[in-house]
Length: 231
Length: 78
Image 1 (cartoon, rainbow over the protein chains, first blue to last red):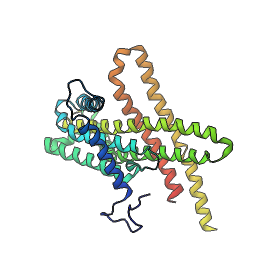
Image 2: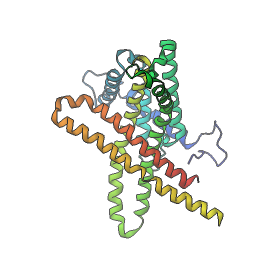
Image 3: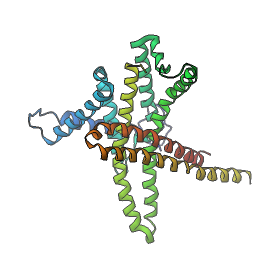
Image 4: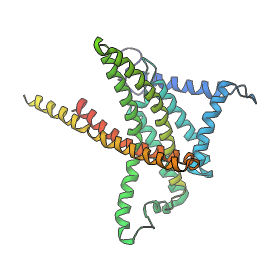
C-alpha cells in the first residue's frame, strides 16, 4: 500500500510517501556503487570499483551485441533503466521495505517512456519508411495485409507486456513469501515453512536480477527495431 | 444473497484462472530444454545464445503472469 510518510492525510502528487522514500534509497544506492566506488580510479581496482566496472561492462556488451554500434549512443539511458530496476528489485527483498517496481504505475511509466522513445526515434530517423517495420516483404503478397494488422497490434501490446511482466514478477514473488510466512506461524509445519521461505528468497534474488536484465535487453531489441526497421 | 453469489463467482473464477500458469511453465521448460539439448551438442556456440534464451523465457513467462494478474484482479478487485 502507498502510505504517506508523515501523518495520515490524502496522497497528492507532492506528498512524500513510502514509494518516494524507497525510490530515493535506490538512487542513493546506485550513487554509492557507481560514483563512490570508482572514486579512487585505481589501475588495480578495489572491490567496489570492480563491481561497478562489472556492471558497466555487462550492460555495455549487451547494448553493443543487440543494438549494434549506433545503439551505443543510447547506452546511458539503458544503463539508467537497468541500474534503477536492479536496485529497486533488490532493495525490495530487505525486511520491512517496499518494492517500488511492484507497482504497475511505476513500471508502466518506465515502459511507456521506452515505447515513446523508440517510436519517436524511429520516425525521426527514418520518416514514413519506419512503417516498413510492419510490411513483411518475405511473405506472400496475399498474406501481407493480415500480417501487417497482426504486427501493428503486437507493436502496441509491447508497452503493456513490458510493464506487466516486471510488476507481476515482483508482486507475485513477494506475495508467495508472505503466504509462506503466514504458514510459519502455525507450529506444526513451521520448519518446512522456514525452509520454503529460504528457498523462495534465493529464487527471488535471482528473479530480481533476471527481470532487470530482461527489461533492459527487450529495450535494446526495440531500439534495434527503431534504428534498423528492415525485415 | 446476491452479493454472496457474485463473490463466489469471483473466487471460482480466480481458481480457474490459475490453470493458465501451467501452460506458461510448460512453455518455459520447452524453451530451456531445447536450449540445453542444443548446447550439449555444440557447447562453444551456446554462450552466444544465452541472451536469446532469456528473451524467450521472458516472453513465455509473461503470459503466465498475465493469468496470475487476472486471478488477483478477480480476488481483490471483483
